Length: 274
Length: 362
Image (cartoon, rainbow over all chains, first blue to last red; front, side, top):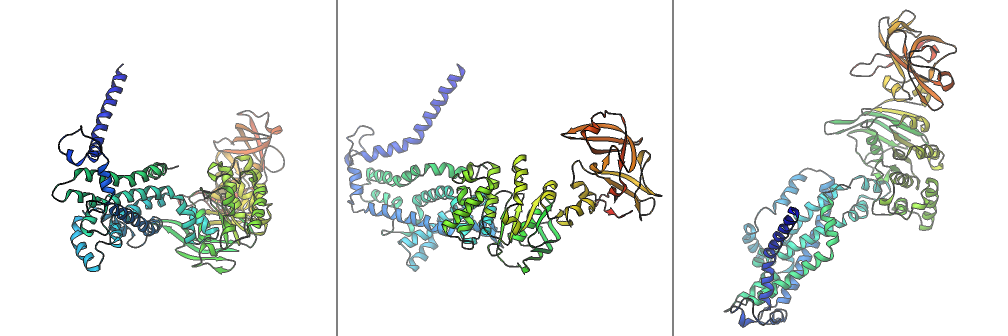
């Protein structure tokens, strides 16, 4: 009897938390479905319409939201790809060899994540203006390395450290070079880790706000900043901002769902020894 | 030929190899025997080029291997951890060396070689399985196969039979030396099992704390062990080591036991007399000892008898045919016989080192 009551209580608490957690999202969905003239009049009774989405995706209001969306994709995928190319060998090297300053190097990399982005943004802005990187894909991919590279290097390092070096040693004795041992033996074994960490890095890059806010104006602007453009002008169009925000959630969500299987395996891999 | 000279290797403050000297002759099957932590695996990895020694030289076929990468040394190694590629099938693991740039064979030829090796090791039926689904014994055979599948200047085998069950181990031990590739190829075989070393090794090296204590044929190791530790390492039941004092005409031990060992050592020296359990008999020719039965234990067709010697508390064990020992009961008086030439003499063990063997005189 008591057990059952406790069960109900637990369920009730969970439902309460669920409502608490999902309410902002529900609110956004409602907001995005409201017609422009009923934005402030009612809370829950209104005639739902997809006009908001049509406007956002239809490139009207003078705000090229679709381009922002594509920019976000290009910049985030580009940042993750570059970080993988640079970060996987770095993670492997730091897991396998200790060299002079290796720990300091790794710590420096991690320290990029300590400082708020705002501390470096002003000098970066000036540098980007001078170097012609302002409002370009290259500039955005580059600056996002501050976000994605430390993550990928540190997580992949622990994956490589968990692999016994004897596997690569066996490959060396089978007649493979060190490079081949890395590509043919070590890399395939950390695939789940690569999937998991790539997704995380992608989400962080996608959600980044400060860098595109200061370092882009139009050509390379991303959704996080772009969605706010609907708030400008004489009347803030909250319904359009809500629709834009919801559209911009789709790619990370889809990605997470498709590689969910890898994700669970990937994120629990380092913790449990087989 | 493998030759290591003056090899030192330290991990932090721990000295793994301490001026190690080792020579394995061309085509020889050499067993390196030692307890865990003695430096056996480090020795193998040093030969393979996976560990770089702090000092000393490694020669393979007379060539100095300094700065030569593992893949250019032409040696094949079987790891104690198997080190199989877990994401590939048994077949792909065996094929790995044959697909590498240095040992590449055409696919058809490779398939044939792998088939032959798999047949030899009794793993033909397992080739399609991912190695994750194999038992430890099966994995170990795949790991051994990956070594044997290609020609090598030397085979380095790190406890390749340790995870097989007893029956299979005995069978594989017999077969291993019959394999043509093994007969032709210089083999350095690491084990902690003295029975394996005696059965397999053309010569045996005993390693302890990063040094080779003794190298020799099985007869040399058996009859002329370097010290009490080496004597203890070989033979089950273990050698009996009776403490005694050098006296006129022999060694006097506790309980009025006299042993006819002649030596140049000064009278009064503390010594240990070694008697192998199989060199003690319940009757026949030789020097006589008396005692009382302490306990008997049947080992199949023979019996291990533990005897309290003389009037003291010192015990020795011996192995006797079941027929002779069947009627013995605890506290029965017995007469033991040992041939004087089978007695070994050692210095007494000291805390810093085991007692060395002392030459006896006929």
